[in-house]
Structures are given as structure tokens and as C-alpha cells.
Image (cartoon, rainbow, N blue to C red):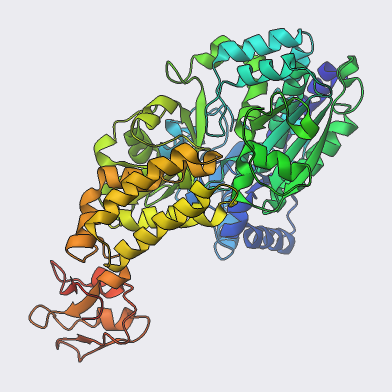
Length: 623
């Protein structure tokens, strides 16, 4: 393929799309958009266009990251740039389109911003939105902007310029650029990417392999999925560059089967690369040949660990093995193999294209570049974000996320998924980088950020995450298989009010043993949620054990709800909203809760309008 000619064609195609007369409607159709109902919105759009004899191009784009505003639609008409409209429903579509197309009313009340470089009248550009303003989009630069199923859109945005540049250098020079950029693996461990490539390139054995680890399995994490759905060619180009650098003729994408849309778009992208001679023999008229194969995993969390991944990829049971040898010297079929995370590979082309000095200008002293995070939990603005490494937790929670849901008090943030740590509000000025997170007992992980408020029980949180890791343990090594089970049993005792003070000592003694003696990263990090909650929220454990109460009203065995007849105003809100009809009482008379029916959902407590709450908790379950 002559890239220069293709870039010219693609750029003209992109320019025509941006300046086209008529109507173009972009629909945010990643998994988050579809879950929010974008398919029904699209059908409503098609119906309106048909009924009003209007012609329009409808394009599906990936997730721009504003998940809390889904379904999202961009509408472009004639010379007006695409305007992003949020929280749409099929019901509002006819009125919105009538206002725009017939009345010339751009409906600024529904507009988030303009997709482009300039504002349109009083509508600012989307990147000036509070959720986007603090972000630096390197990995996500195309997500939500281009059609992921059109390779020309990617090429028009400087796609495949990175591999074109790399192929004009020696492989060692490519590795040196990556080394100088300072990028570390974005899969969680933070191992220097260039060092891994260098070790593999210098290892004995042929052929060599490159593997993309797309087995994202953390609860609440969707960074890799969103990138693959919104910009698959960025990851594939990164694989091309990595393969050239290490001398690999073949690559694998190991992706969990639960990501059907990402798999579908990867398959389309790979076929397009073949059509453009970007895969196969003599790529770009050089001696470099490379091909990619997709391997679907069954969704085992442990297969995110690289040796378990390799076993699964080769058709074996997904279980880790001892290291050394490391995959860089003995990986797929015993040959030297580089395993890189989706985000790592999605960044590589930009580093080569823009240069290591440009990239290393972002981030912290010991952690260069940006990091994507899935921002979820008790936060006003949830979504996919990308910020420079070294950004403070406070800036992410309040500037990007907009603060705590319902203006409640910020309590903690969980980083690094189920094997990460809970960082308390007192550490809100902590900068997010590998070393800083490690210093407080947490890890970077793949990039999950779960925000918690004052109504979160930290004992329950530790129990939840340990339940996940214990269930996902492959069972190969005793410390992880038995140790996590014993820890979980102690947490269950504490949640039920049967815990003893000695249980806390046992938890603190057992956790280091599991961390130090487990075979793989799952077991080595599984105790982190317990250790960090004990470290920063020990008073909550003591309340469960000594006082037999859950301060956050979460652990159902330790709470019972009664109504104080002296304070009850008989408004009936609790009675009306009780899901099991456990509350009775006449209007303006004190109400009563039938404790045999009560499921302890706490709706009555939350909804009570009386200051200080007429509903109060007592210890001892239903006593």
C-alpha cells in the first residue's frame, strides 16, 4: 500500500464528511451506548427521517467517554459542525429533530458541546465540558470521533503513520524511542515496555510472538473494551510496531468472549488491514511480514495473568506457572513472546509518530504519559477518562467526576480492581502513579476507579472484592486457594456480628503469607482490599465486632429498623415506598414496621423527611 496516496484519499474523504451538505447523524454505539438504549434512539431517528422524507447518513461511533450522558447523538447539518446531544430517549427524538431541522433551534438545553475545534455560537466545544476539560486524550484521541469500522477514518487521523515511520528505522531504534518515552505497561504491573521488547528480541528461539492481552476482567472496568470498540486500528497498529521491533511474524489478540462488539470490530479491522496490505507478506513494500489471529477466552479472571493467558491461548487449562522462565524467553509454544496490554499497544503508534520527547512531556517524573480509567461508583459523572499520570485523586473526583453523588461525603476510592486497595479520603491529595499507589497499599491495576461515599461499609467492600478473587482463584496453589477462603470466612463472621477481636489479628497475619507465597499476581494481590481497609478503617471492623453494628447500615445481620413513635409525623412515605409492605399506620399517626417482613433494604430510613430521621437502627438483627 502506498500510504501517502491512501492518506490523501482518506483525508479528502474525512474532509468531505465534515463539510458535507445535508444531514449526518453520529450515534454513540459502543456497549455503554447500547446498554443505555441507543438502538431504540437510532430507530426513532430513522422513523422520523422516513416520515418527514429526510435523507441522512447515520454513522456509529465508539464511546467518547461521557457514559453518564448516554445515549449520545451528534447531529451535523450543512455548515454546522456536529453537536453532541445527551441523555436522549426515543420519545424526545421527534421534537429534537423537528426543532433542529424545521425551526432552526439547535436545542442548546440538550447540547453538551460541539465536536470540533471551534465553538458554535453559544455552544462550546465538547472538550471544554467540565468532565473533559482536565483530560489529555492520547490513547482515546479517536474514540467517539471516528467510525471504528472505516479504516479510512483512522488513516485520515494519521493512522498507520507510526508503522510507516517505524519501518524506515532499525528495530533497535524503535525500541530505543519507546524506552526514552518512559512508557510502562498499562496492564497493572508497570513493567517498562521497552525492556520487555528488548529482552524478547535478544532471546534465543524462533519464531517470536506478540500477544495483546484483552482479557479485561475487573468489576467496573471497561477501558480496554471501549478502546477496542472505538478505535481498534490504534491497537492493531501498535501490534504491528511491536512485532517489527521484536521480529515477530505472528501475533494473537486474547480477548474474553463476553466482549462481542469488540471482537466484531476487531475482525472487521483485521480484514480491512488485509485489504490494504497492512497485514500479510511484505507490508508497505518491505521485508516485514506479519499476521494477527484472535483467540477468545472463556472469561476466567485468572487468565489476565500472563502465564495463565498463554496456557489458555495454547488450548490448555488457564492456570499460571512458576517464573522464570518468563514469557519474554519462553512464551507461546515455548518461544520468546511479548505480552502487552490493550492500552499499552494503543499508545505505541502515537509515541512513534509524535516522538518520545513529546510523549514524555506528559505525566509524572517516574511515570510518563497518560492513563485511562473507568470512573464509577458514587460519583456524579461516571465514564471513561484519560488523565496524565501524577494527577491527584481530588482532581479526578471533583473536577472530572463532578463530586460525590447527591453531595454526600467522600469516603474512599478503590484503585486497581478487586486486587487493588481502598484509599481513604485523608489521602485525597495523593497523586496517581505507580509508586504513590504502592506506598499506600494500593496498585494501579488496569485502571479501575471506584468511588465510595459515607454510606459505604468498608467491611462489606473488603468482603465483596475478596469474594470475587476467591471465586476466581484457579486453585493451583494452596496459599491462594485455602488462604483466601479462610480470610473470607472471617469477614463473613464479622459481617454477621459473630466476629472476635482475634479475627483481626488473624487477618493481618494471614494476608502477608498469601501475598508472599502465592504463585501468581491474583493471589499475591488478593489481600489488598482487606489490608487497606484494616489499615485505614479499622474502627469499622471494631464497630462490627465490639458493638455488633454496621455504621453504614449495610450489613443486614447487624441492623434492624424501628420507628420512633414520638418523632414519626405519619407522612406515609416509608409505607408507600416499602417494597414488601412491611410498614403500616394511618395518615398523621405513628407507623410501625413488621420486623418479620422487613428485608432491611433501608429505603424507609433513607426516605424519611424528619430531621435526624424518625427511623433508627438497632443492633442484633430483628431484635
